[in-house]
Image 1 (tube, rainbow, N blue to C red):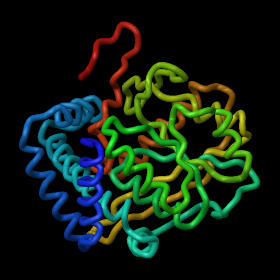
Image 2: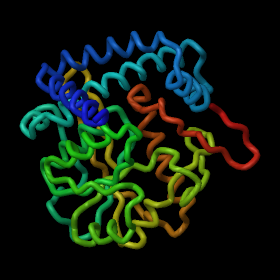
Image 3: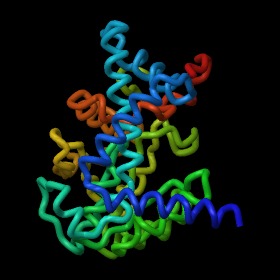
Image 4: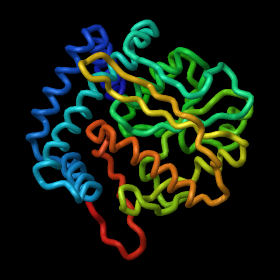
Length: 292
């Protein structure tokens, strides 16, 4: 009963937000983020730790400014889930501008893995793509059951096939070889299994090797994509890049490093839009102390 009530409340709140003007929701999210930033908390501590590790060349004042801007984007992104999860395909088409270096199709002759990253607008890009072409998505179940149920249902409302991260590798390979692309993100610390420690902003980060393994088994190309927040409250831009050259290369650690290097290049363009509130350096190499 409790989960059902939470589910109804969360759904009603997000649905209500989707009916409001986008700019109003965005500005409200930024204002709420500015207020919540004033309150000490775990996410704020994680944010400051990540920025201190990744931007040692910045002084305290510069990192403080970046932290405030990041927090505004993070909270804003939570409110914008309303239009992302409940907005119509027509609404999403008006908010998202698409630029692609590859030809987009309903089915691909070569299996295709779309490699995403946790920028503030990642949901908008994924949702918009699903209105255009069939796609499957590997997702990480959320700890809150009510929110997890809503996210799976709404992310899949345009036909996206939702596959849990702990699902069968055989199922994922079957989808890839059918011609339907798969979207996944690999820029979080998902544990030591199938991972290696490679640098990210000069800090050893536990990084998945699953992307290169899936690409090797399926003969798939790996196509990165980034969704950014457009200035002036105009919506988002989905940028789909060319497939990574010589990926996989046969060395899982080298592949993981290349993913991190690509991501670092993109983060440096709009560092305030990256989800620095995640514990990216949760696990440490043997002998290294915890950072959080």
